[in-house]
Length: 170
Image (cartoon, rainbow, N blue to C red; front, side, top):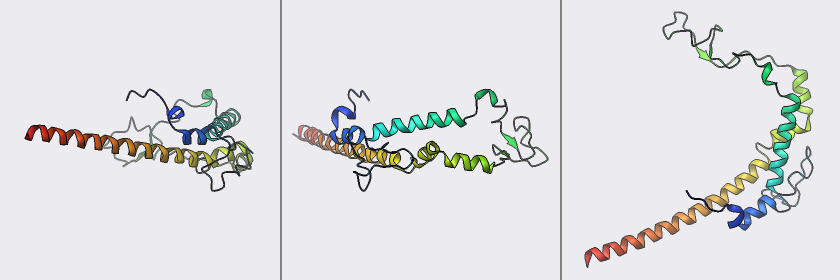
């Protein structure tokens, strides 16, 4: 595509959303408070996305499973009898169904602990909250720019085609 410059240099509205004060994706852009991370959205979408990544990193460090704790077969495709589907042929007499679904045992104490963690609440709220809405607003801006570029290209193409027809007819 030969993109030489980004939206930072071409679109002032993009820069207001990313780096400006406030949260223009909200109905009230002056109220950017989030209960879990106060003022995370008050300094623009860029600051909010950095806060999101910081929260994710914090959650993974505190609650994530260390790679050495994974068993070597935790993600193998298994049939409904627990056999490895790589060893079960398609004409298996048992009529097994291969899925990635393994039985999950929920630890309610752990769920309650995670639900009370402000970092986890902040991260999960962003999937339909400020981060999602802010990036959706950016997508609208970029879609509008794309539409105008395509319209200009089509108009130029029509002019060139008209000139070609005129030259060919005369």
